[in-house]
Amino acid sequence: MDQGPAITPQPMHNIVLIGFMGCGKSTIGHELNKNLGYRLLDTDHAITRQTGKTIPEIFEQDGEDSFRQLETELLEHLVAEKTSHHIISTGGGMITRPDNLPLLRQLGFVVWLSCTPEDILARTSRNSNRPLLQCDDPMAVITSLLKERSPLYEQTAHIEISTSGLEFSEISCGILESARYHFASQPDPT
Image (tube, rainbow, N blue to C red; front, side, top):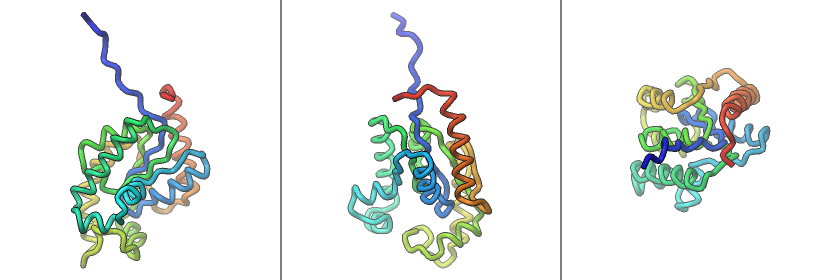
């Protein structure tokens, strides 16, 4: 008996921010929350609350693979719960796990926030919560990781927006306009 075509799950109505550390995901997330009224969910903060450990502690005590598994489990939970009408700000390395890419797109409109390596270094240099940059040559690490991750950001995102040289209000406005167009072409799953 033919059961007809498989039903593809509709993406949920969230704005998902991806991009390298220091590109403005948290700041833009707060700006979008203020302008749109969607709840803000920062995946790093959610994992910190869940584990009772800081990100550097998780990296040091459990390893990066353990942290990446926690990210995947969080995304799976958000999809299973049909989380909608949220701004989801993700960790910079979330796209390094192939399982996460379709989950991110299923959650909604994916925006890749990018910026120059120089801006990344300037924005992250005084922050000790960046375990991957606690080394002698953070610019070399930034350059290497950007080269590795940029194709994954591009593959996952619906749109790329550079945060270098723009005001956060301008970036937020651009994201909101793009998201409205994106959501208008899809039924609201809620």
